Every structure is written in C-alpha cells, then in structure tokens.
Image (cartoon, rainbow, N blue to C red):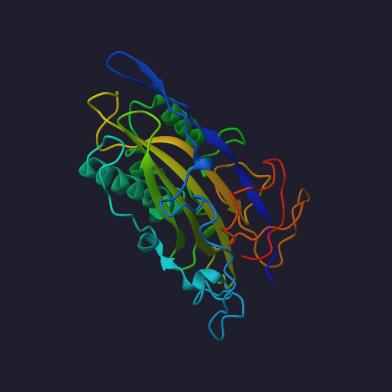
Length: 301
C-alpha cells in the first residue's frame, strides 16, 4: 500500500467591501451554516464511499488504471462531475443573472483545477480572468502566491498544480464529486453560490520508465457572492469570491513552493507526520480537519 500524508490548507476569507450608489456593504459569508433546499446541511451531503469496488480493483493504481482501488473509480470524469442546479430568480436577481453566475463559477472551478495547463504548473490565467477585476485584494494575493509562493501565500489554496519536472498526469482524467447550491444572500439584490467538490488527481513520476501512480486528493469549498450590478460595484460576467477553503491529501506539508508534492510507494515518511489518520473520500463531515500546522496521515488514496 502506498504511504500517504495529508495537508490542510488554511481557510482564507475575503470580506470585501462593495461600493453601492450611496452605501458600502460588507460581505459576510456563512459557509458553515448554509442549508440546502431539502433542509440538509450544505456539508455532509455525501458519506464515506463504502460500496464494494468492481472485481480486480483491489490492486493498486497503475498508469493504465490510475483509479484502481479508489472509490473515485465510480466518480464522474472531470467537468462532467460539476453539475449545476437549475437556476431560478433568487434574492432579487433574475434567473438569467443567477444562471450566468452559476456557469461562471463552474468555469472557474474547471480552469483552476482541471485545465491541463493549470495542472502542469502553468499560470492559471483563465481562472484569474474570471475573478472580478474590482477585487484587487484577492487578485493581488493570488498574484503574490504565484510569483513568490510561501506558507503564507500559497497558490494551492485556490489552484491545483504540480511541478512538471517532478510528476506528470497519469492519464487525461481527473475524477470529481460534489455539488453546487445557491441561496439568497444576506443583502438585498444578492445571491450566494456554494460549491463543494472533491477532486482525485493521479500522477506518475516525470521519467520515461515511471510505473508507479500516486493520487493526490483535493477538496475545495467555494462561496461566490453574486450582486446586482445596478446597485453594487461589480463586473457582470465575473465572479466575486467571498470565501475559499482547501483540504489537500497526499501532498507534502513541509514544502511551500506552489506545487503539490505527492508521496509514492516507498517514499520516506515526512518527519512532521502526526495526528489521527483521515479519509480523503469522507464527505460526511463539515470539513473539519487538523490545524494548518499539523501533518496527519491519510487512511487511503
């Protein structure tokens, strides 16, 4: 069995101020208290994947079968797993406005996590271009994280990317599972979109004879604030990200160079590994994980 470790990327909340015609309104994300239409908590919509896997999947992954032995074997491929709810007029916004914002949120998730250029460590320009240009606080933070990555400014909090000199994708598929919901915002003329997705990213070492596959699992939770451009200073066709979280499993928790660094079978364990093991496929909790300075093992990848 491959040795793995987990990493939690700390929450980064953007409490941005939107200038209205005659007032300034603060965004107040309520990610942990959001409710789905059916009354279930936003988190906890999918429990641990415990169903038996298909015959032959008990063996570990290989370049020809990168998801073998993983619950993700049953998950959707890439963007097909990011399914949007049917839009409706909400929070004083038209159905067309909500529909466009849902589509832009999906496009952002794809550009930030599934685009081949992003995954191989290139600048995620398509994702950056979708962020509202009036949100200079967030854009400046992301620019700093990409130019000079560090523990404080870590692009992995928003983008899924590997060092191409170290690893390459083990095939063209990233498995995805999760859901998107929306609700009326706390302010008149606003809607909050909530996206919660787990992505399974298989990679192999960047060499011709590489025959081992490692899987890094990333869970991303995103809240997008949609506002009426007639009232608030926002840019139509762009998204305003109010809050974002990332839980990263099977990546070094001591290296902060802006890339995911998965562990392969036979790799020496990191000395900082501690705490109880976590199941990266468990979506039944409210996203609670070790403190950012902990480096807990994972039970499987």
